[in-house]
Length: 313
Image 1 (cartoon, helix red, strand yellow):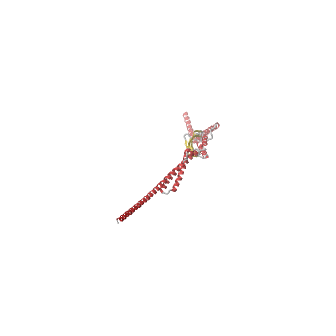
Image 2: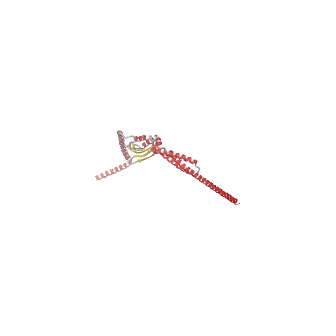
Image 3: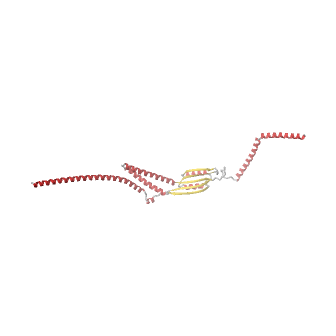
């Protein structure tokens, strides 16, 4: 009887221990599953955040790579075949016989050669009866040397003549390379803008795009300026009139015969002026002369009578 009771107690204890062990395993399994789910959620959020940061980094990296790809290497620069771009500036100082005629000739030549006048000014010296001024012109580069020769040939004296050049070829090629790079970056940013889904990414790309487009306009403006300065040379001319001819004589200097005729006519004019003056004086004062003559005659008669009376006495 006691043996059976011991067996029943042992079996009951075993069942209790087995049940406790199962509950412990179940709770452990539940906690493990909860921990795993939490880890997955954390990992997912980490992956999403890292993905967003990778998108931003990718934009910056690809933008930088785009800029690097557009910059030519030393070998490519050697292959670039570009005309030399040189800014020519000429300064002339000349003397002419007729300022207005010289200015008209210069303007006509500039227009015929495809150039134009930038500014012009003229001043007159009344004390010395002369005119002087300054004119600045833009002449096509392939025509400016012939134009300078024309100005020098048409002047009576060349006081100063100088030509200087500034080579801007390297700067222009560098601007071309930078412009290509900026256009590539602009295309990449436009592509990123189409793919952007978040507002903050769209704003960031828009700011970068505005900056790049501003740099493109600045580079383009500088290139246009250099092209204009290299296509047209700048010629500055100081003009001084030095007219030694007699005032009022436009057909050249007088010869001896012409001087003789001029002096003869002057003599005749002088005599005519004298006789004309005397005639005017006599005729104009004739009434006065008659009155004075009458008074003189009366005085003379009185004088003779007085003298006769005194002599008889």
